[in-house]
Amino acid sequence: MNLNQKSLLAKASVFTLIGLATTSNLFAAADTAGGDLKSDDFVGVTFWIISMALVAATAFFFLETQRVTAKWKTSLTVSGLVTLVAATHYFYMRDVWVATGASPTVFRYIDWMITVPLLMVEFFLILSAITKVPAGVFWRLMIGTLVMLLGGYLGEAGYMNVMVAFIIGMLGWAYIIYEIFLGEAGKINAASAPPSVQKAFSLMRWIVVVGWAIYPVGYALGYLTGANPADSSDMLNITYNLADVVNKIAFGVIIWTAAVSESDKAAAKA
Image (cartoon, rainbow, N blue to C red; front, top):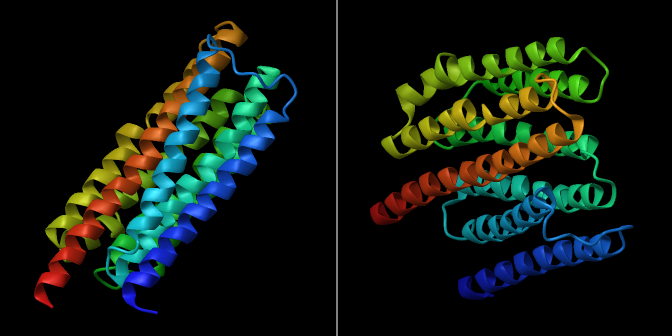
């Protein structure tokens, strides 16, 4: 089997995988009680649009793994896994919302418990593609991520006072920001990474600062303003949905840009 045949086979496999995943979720959506999406249900519409955007991003990232050099394939594959996991959860969250009108808190946090650590791993992976990175960087990013998510879930699920849980989550987020700006990860990037990787790393960490700020804003609007519960639920889910599509897809696109740039340079030198 030559290189072109292998590439075609890989592309066919990706489209088959995405097609099966999408079809199974569409059938699941059709079977949901009261599962008709109303045209005036803006929250439900955002769930649906974002599901499709995540599926499209998944296909793109998996296909682009054939374009980059070996040391970048893992980073792009992880980007595809993030959007694939998120797309699958969004189909189910859409069903929960349309059928019940209730916030799919459990599904959302299951999604975040998988995808957010993977996003943090991306910082470790892109640095590992250009230099040796201590394992401590990986574990510090994981600890910050878990503290952030645990605080948010305990507050939203009603297991802890919402303000106390909010503070815990913010501390985890602050710990992540410190590591990628002033901690060992940030220092390795500044000292060892080529310009394209430094640019990608910088954009990724600003997504963590600016893009991820949408989540605590959504939490505050949903739980700390004393607004009507129905209105708060709508605002919370719209905010979270828009944040997810920007942060997850944008993260992958930034990594793809760095991977393609470095791969093209390697090919030019060969």
